Amino acid sequence: MGKKKQGQFSSSWGFVLAAVGSAVGMANVWGFPAKMGSNGGGAFLIAYLVFIALFGSVGLAAEYAVGRRAKTGTLGSYRMAWSTRGSAAGQAGAILGWLPLAGSMCIALGYAVIIAYVLKAFAASLGGSLMTADTAAWFDSFSLADYSVIPFHAIVVVGTLLTLFLGAKSIEKTNKIMMPLFFIIFVILAVRVALLPGAAAGYRYMFSPRWEELLDPMVWIWAMGQAFFSLSITGSGMIVYGAYLHKDEDVAALARQTALFDTIAALVAALVIIPACFAYGLDIGAGPSLLFVTLPRILQDIPLGRLFAVILYTAMVFAGVSSLQNMFEAVGESLLHRFPRMSRRLVLVLLCLICLGIGVNMEPIFKWGPWMDVVSIYIIPIGATLGAISWFWIMPRNDLLEEVGQGAGKAPGPLWYSLGRYVYVPCAVILCCVALFLKVAF
Image (cartoon, rainbow, N blue to C red; front, side):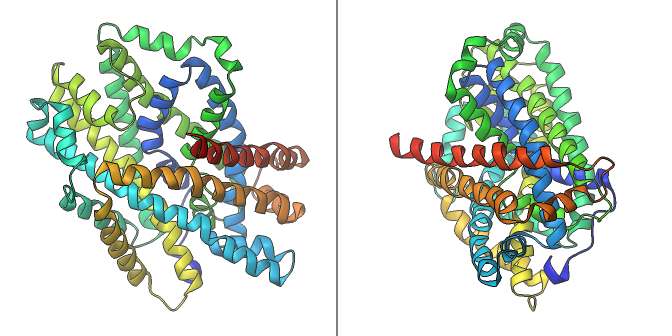
């Protein structure tokens, strides 16, 4: 973190697992299947893969490179990029950096509540009560009540912050355990779902696109937004992981690997949820209730359902904590960079108190739902847009290309930069404008 940076990732594989851990989360497990289910199935998948390829190879690589060049996270990276236009511009860039940083903190507040719900579901699965409950009534009993998951909320926040105590080393070690287990668990669940009668209809929906759906611009808009969110390209979080990279690492290759494993995680989650919903005739666009109402109802009806429920929610806790690590690390590193006299321990304690103090007041779903909408519709798209413009329009071309090319076997060249400047940046601007329009219109 900042001048007190806690080491670097010890290997490329450790970095990729940490970055995938940040990207893999609720956006993959319920966001991707729900968006796919309500936006054309296979057609949405094609559009999504197009944007993942673009954003992973260009946008994500740029964020890694900028963080490594600045040797710090959000605030220092924006200052570095803008200071190339003069000292006054550098000061303006440092101020602009607070917006995407605020996005990371704001979404962490709501995200911690969601993971607390997942931890509660894990406990109910382990104890067996979830296997006999009316899942809709069970979910309503805590998701619509004030201060209903405080103990679970505290465990999530304190536990996550403890994993950050040693910085990059802690993040790497925990994700080397959590991410492989996440993939193994979801593969086991996908195999079990494949045995359900009627699951084949879900596979046909996923992989047999109706080509006319690709003519619907909203399919492309939703796919673009999902790709941004899934890869954690927010103009903040992935920058700090880049700051912990060795100078001889190939950031473009690491970005492609992150995008690949993130996409595999999304597809494996969809292979669990979509065929299961088809098998039981349930709504695949149900959002959060997929995890807390739909899937538990399915698990109640299958042999060894309790075991599979424990497995499911274990994987979800891993996915959630690994994403929350990145949000907290981005904020903590920038605070230490801005206020170097603070200790890492003090910053983590402050983040813990802030998250618990504000977060417990968002525990009912009707409170954190609108909060997360504001963050995802306003703050994150604006932060992503500011980052894209800063790297490809403010920062000198040669500086960015030099950093992206450092350590690369085949350095990205003018084509890569042109894709960033004339395709990636307009995509970020379009997403930002459409998100604001949709919020105003609807």
